[in-house]
Structure formats: structure tokens, C-alpha cells
Length: 574
Image 1 (spheres, one colour):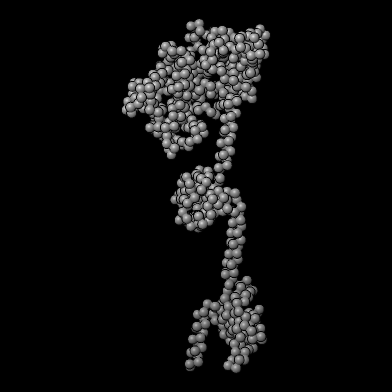
Image 2 (cartoon, rainbow, N blue to C red):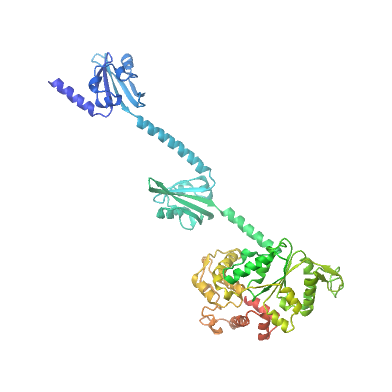
């Protein structure tokens, strides 16, 4: 009774074990098999008992263990249904040491082996990915969902100057010199972030960063950022800009992309100028001083077939009448005392094949006007002191801020010349008539000043823009340029946005028609010289506004020469 109970308890215990167990006697017959083994080999327990082991497991090595008496530990064995077992086989001995049987303990490792193969594949894939990441020239940074560094590549270390010890396990902001963390933004929004400019590393290099979330089974597990080093590109761009500036001092400086045109009137003028550029037509640019007539002249030349030839600018009002004729048309040897031996080419000869821009043509004397008429009619010039005509192929662009029709009526400008230069007139509206362009103009000028002054002024506040848009701008775009230049000088090095307090003290912060005295209210005590200079500047500004930029009328009203007016305008930035 006790023996049968013990056998029952043994079978229950064996069936409770998850590993398969098979025991055989000395003849190789199965004397014990538990439920796990029966299921693995695909045989019923009752049928398996008494059968030869090889009938149940054809490739069993238990018979070999019986013969050799040597155990086999943790050996792999394949069954016919692609099942892989991990088996240990041990001989069973009696009290005298004689082998009386053998037992095998085994388990199915098919899933484990499959998992091991997958792990091996994953290791290979990881090695491949690491090789790719390490080979890329762009820096790569990976953080976990908490924003702490878990991976960087060699390019990252080269760009930032940081090692794994400086970054891994540290917050994502550890490498940022200027700007906000792309990693933290990605983790907060779970969305990709593109094209963020910032400065990173010890050298504060300029970089462009793209970031993206790392999702596993719809769960956010981290963020990856690709960091493009643009410091070299920026340096080359700056060198290119400098080269362009040098070239522009030798040729026409601007083209149509440099003209801000947002108002309907300005858009129309630019469109007409583009159409006229590809024709040989003589163009007359009309408008107040500082509206951008010279800018249009440059752009027209650069869009014409003559763009690869000379562009010569002549400010007719800035050259005395006694010199203007010889400058424009040249002179022959011995034409006057002090004339150069062999004579001198005039600007028209130098500009042959290109364009000559005659600014302030309304200030030219009647004598010079007659010679200009000959150039337009005959396409030839005669040097001072000579009688031999010299053919020239020059396109003329003229500009004036005075009313030429009134000048013709007053006998100050030749009627025939007027109609010769007024073949294609273009009127450039003053800044006060296109105030909607002031924000774009201001930001365009800021980029120019940043290059010239070596500053990093990023923007201009809406409050400052509002003040600029309230102003009458008698000096037009030129005055806007001067005001912004002074505002940048008034800024501290750490400030990056122009605000109302940065605008010059004499800039009227009130209504456009405020009295002159309002420019000085609330200012600190200054010297009399400074106060007089501020008053004179404001008085000149009002006079220019009253006469719509006509400098001849302003000079007459103030009782000063035109040359003195130019000097004062340049001195006060008008």
C-alpha cells in the first residue's frame, strides 16, 4: 500500500515539473515519462510506458549513455517537427555501481533559440546603424524621454568639442551656447522640428538642427537630432557678400531684388522699370530726394543688355558748373590752363557701351544742357577745346526732384532737352505715400547694417514701427536709413531689438505735425551748440517736407546756396 502511494506521489511530482523527464531501464524500455515529456515527443503516457526509447524518440542518445556510462549535459537535440530540445542525459546506477538505466531531462528551446537569433540580428543591425551614424558628417544626438543624452557620434564631438562624458546622462541643454533645445521641444510636442538655428559647443558654432521624436509601439521613448554645421557656409556667405560689395563699388550696386515694393504704386513703377530696362529708351526718374531714384538707375542698368559694361553715376548738382562740362565731355590738350597733356576722356566716353546716370539733371546750366542735347540727338560728344566729334554709345538715365515743366516755363531748362530725356518718365512715390512698406524696408536695412556694423540686431519692435509709420519722412528712404543707423548705435551690445527709446532724441515720437519745439521737450540739459544743431536739423526737415524735397526751393527760402544746403543735409542725415 505504501509503495503504490509513493509511486502515485512520484508521478504527481514528475507531472508538475515543466521540464520533460524520461527514464529507461537497462534494455532501453521507457519505465517513466512525465506529462511535459509526453507532450514534447507527441506520445500518450500510457502508450509510451514499456516501449523502446527509439520508438518514441528515434534520435535519442539514452542508449549511448547506457553503453558508455558517461553523462551528456546540455546537449541540443532536434525533433522531426523543427522542435529543438536542450537535453541532459545521466546514467542510473544501483548500490553496487552497476548501470541499471538512464534518465533524460529536457526542455523545448525553439523559442529561446529563435529569440537568440533575433538578438543576434538586432546586434548586427545595431552595429550597422552605429557604423552609419558614426560615418555621417552631420552631428547626431539622441536623448531619452527625460531629455538626457544617451548617444552621440564622432561628428557631434568634432562640432561641439564635447565628449561622451560631457553629454551622456546630462540634460539636453548642456551643449547649447545660444538658442532653445530642439530635443526638449520635440519631447514636449511629440512633433518633428525643422531648421532651427542656434549656436552650440565651446566654440559657439552656428548650426542648423532638425529634431524628431523616437516612437516605439506608439510610446515616446526619446528624441533624435541631426545637427548641420553651417559655420563654414556662413563664413563663405559673408565672404561672398563682401566680394559682392567690392564688385558693386566697381559696377552698378543694386538690382530689382534690392527694391522693396509692396504698395500698388511702387509695384507698378518696378514693373514699368523692368519693361524699360531691356530697351535703349532714355529714362527720366522723378521723385523727391531720397526716394530711391539711384537705386532704380542701378537696377535698370543691371537688368539691361549693357549690364556687363560701365555704369557711371554723376551728381550734376555736386559738381561746379565750371567743371561739369569738362567732366562730362572731356577736354583736349591745351583747352585751358592746367589741362592735362594729351587731354582727358570725359565720363560719356568712359561710359561708352554702358549707362550714364545723370542725377539732379535739373541743376545743369543751359550751356551744358545744349551739349547734352547733342549727345541725345547725334550720339556724339565734342571735348572742351576741340571741334572733332567723338561717337559714343551710351544709354542715359536722368533723375531730378524738381518740377521740370515749371523749370522749362521759367526758362531754366531747355524745352527740347526736356522732351528728349522725358521719353519714358518714372515717378517714384515718396515714403509717406507707401507707409505699408516701412516694416519691410526697416528690416531690409537692418540686415545691411548688421553686415556693416558687425552687429546682430534681429528685429524692430512694433512700437518702434508704429512711430516710424507716423512720421512724415521728408528725407524719404535715405532718412529712414539714417534714423535706423543711429538707433543701432544707441543700442547696447546685448540688445537685439530696436525699441522706441533707441530712436534718436530729435526723432518726433508724437504726431506728424507736432511743433518744432516738441523735439526738445523732456530732454536733459545740453550744450547750446547741440541744442542749436538739433533745432537747425528739425527746421531743415520741415522746410524739405513743405517743398516736397525740392532742394532748390528750400535753399531759396532759407537764403543759403544749394551747396550749403547739401552740406547741411549730409551733416544732419537728411
